[in-house]
Image 1 (tube, helix red, strand yellow):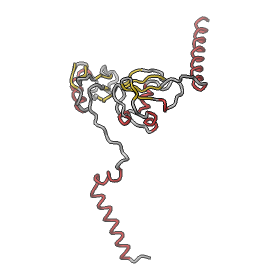
Image 2 (tube, helix red, strand yellow):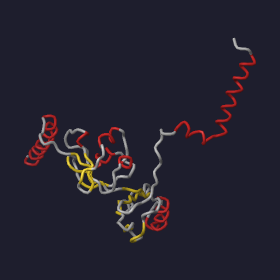
Image 3 (cartoon, rainbow, N blue to C red):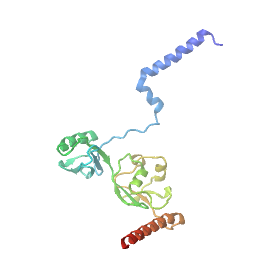
Length: 227
């Protein structure tokens, strides 16, 4: 059994340590959390990208859509006309548009979000260009295009820029749940899910099932109409 004086010294030491950490407050947190949290990215609007406008409380807002930002950093907005957007923060844009559009809105809480233009092509239901936020997950963008048309392998997904493959492991980015920003995806890039050269039974079954369903629905409609 430890003498009372030793136990007392230990208690004093523990109390002193806790007091020091409490006094440091927020300064002590990075010591324990460094490397565990993602850095918060700047939310600036950049030339060549896009801006998504949303007025959440006004479902009838005519302004809810995506506006392209041209190479000069300008965007054509309703009422506002062609204005400089690049380099502005969300707070700048939201405050300006809320005041400008106030006469046309039931609620002036305008939300402006930086977005990029990404093409999703190949083995997806709805190939085309989409405007996700920088911090959307890579797989979220694939889902925006309706998801894969037939089963596929992650390691076959490629990232292309100006028609040329980019040295990025897209499969690894998806498996890690990385965002477009973390994966190095830029505005104008293409995420391609290549179609299989040889269709396997596993790939053909969903297509056969869809075709049969379409035929049966058409037959049912025909029977109902001709009765």
